[in-house]
Image (tube, rainbow, N blue to C red; front, side, top):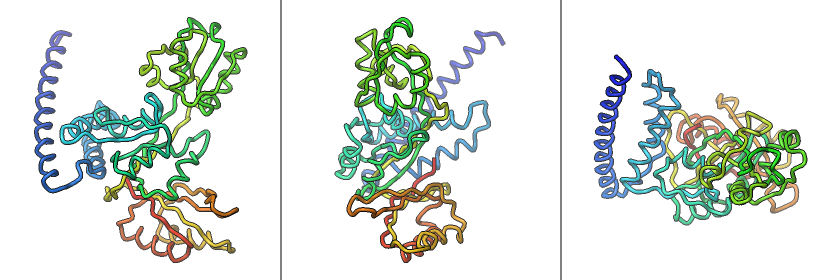
Length: 353
């Protein structure tokens, strides 16, 4: 077969795929109507996770499993939008890494709502104005996002999902070359993640802190001597050329994001649970609380302490571990932990990233 033959065959495949996608869309509309009649939620995270994992397991290539998940997440997003557009709040403005995380998690067909602060995201979910919210919780270079942890202490919202996003910082500018850049602006965390590169390549440029990477992109859009440290999404959103790609000092820089919602998520077979607890100031009490996890061979993936901000030197401990709260082993461990600590809050069980 020559090139034209292969292209003709691909055209045939595309027509078949389009026909099947629209058949799937009609089926989604029928499912949406049944859900409406039975007052059921339109979006069920555990069902989505099972669909994606099933297809990834069936995949025999040459497409990678991650590519299959990405394609089908967009298909699921578009199908859900036919049933009922899903309102999702995220830490804005448009073009931030949290925006990119929200698109990766819910697809581009979701109704994505940029919000000014992490507290605003929690409030929109708690008040029912957004079904879900996406917030950053920790970065592999800069550590925890304390505002998110503090909100989890008192919020009624549940953790319903997680995802990680590789953070690639780019230098955005209308300057023709690096030597024309006089000012580099961005969010303080973004500037910190690129400090060594900036010192090596733009030693004479002045740095300027901005409230967000996207605010920096907006500034660089109209001033050719100004460069912004921001994402590729910000470059596309605000139409600023990328002068230099990947200027972050740590090539393994990754941020973990949480998805918050109001409805508990059922087990998928590959889950994680997050809790927080407080304890008495006594010898051996932390060992006593953690011992049931080892006894039941439940793998803890994170433990972190935060001040309660209510009394000096009073702390709460955040723990993530593998398993779902509705399984027997996890239920037994949580019962033991509750007996040994002063206060226990289950933040949520959700599909592991």
